Every structure is written in structure tokens, then in C-alpha cells.
Image (cartoon, rainbow, N blue to C red; front, side, top):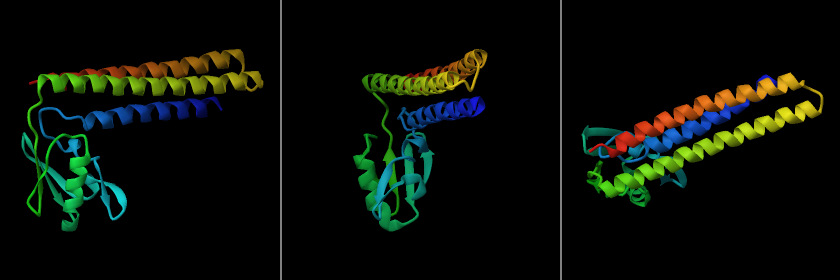
Length: 185
């Protein structure tokens, strides 16, 4: 019972970290990279589909992203999806390809993105702490029901805390890297 709860908690905390990393991947820096557009969802025959599932994405130049749809009929839907996203880049559609010219970021926009990255990291930490709280409640309930001893309760809480500390350290390292990446000129 203890091992399953610890494993479940670790899995859920790791998902929070993965979510944060996905959000960071989609944050725009001054350079073009496929992660900026991969997860943008486009209405494709009534289904919200990520662009990466509908097209090949390449970066031929440091400031340009080229999207080549697998289905030429979807190019208009992709263009609408890109315009509706919070990317802030106007797509150029030539009928076969969509080109995105990534402009350099202003100092003010960089600071806004760093602030947003900090918010995302804090949301991730909060999510992880909520998982810890839930796991600890499960342990305490098991203690009350006589399923585990006081020592097992204490060691289980310690295991959860160690996992949380380890993952929070990764959150801090990822945030530091993203901040440096966003602030470089």
C-alpha cells in the first residue's frame, strides 16, 4: 500500500514537471524552434489537432519556421490556428507552406515572458505540493485504520518529501535555464 501510494505520488509530481517543461518549450525566445508551434491546436475536420500531427515543421534559418502540411487542404485551418494562438507572429501562406518569421523580442517582452515562466514554475510546485498533501493524507488514514505503524507513517512521509525536493530542484534548474534563454540577446 505504501509503495503504491509513493509511486503514484511520484508519477503525478513528474507529470507536473513534464507539463511545465512543455509550457516552457512553447515559450518564444528570440530564436526559431519547432517547439513554438508543435502544440498549437488547429480545428481539423472538427477535431482539435496539434500542428505537429498535421505537418512537418522545420527551421531553415535562425529566425524562420516553415510548416509543410501533409494535407494541403488544411493549410487555411493551420493559418487560422496560428493567428488565434498567443504566439504573436503573423503566418505567411503561399498555398503550399506556411512561413513564420520570428522577430527579435523587446526587453519588455522578455521580462513578461520571464514573469510568465516563473508563474508556470510556481504552478508546477503547487501541483507537486498538493500531491504530497494527498499522499500524506492517505498515509494518515492508513495509520488511523491500523494498516501501518507510526514508524511506517513517518518514513513514508519522508520518502514523499525527498521526491518532492528532488523534483522541485529540477523545476528551479529548468526555470533558471529558461530565464537565461529568454534574457539572452
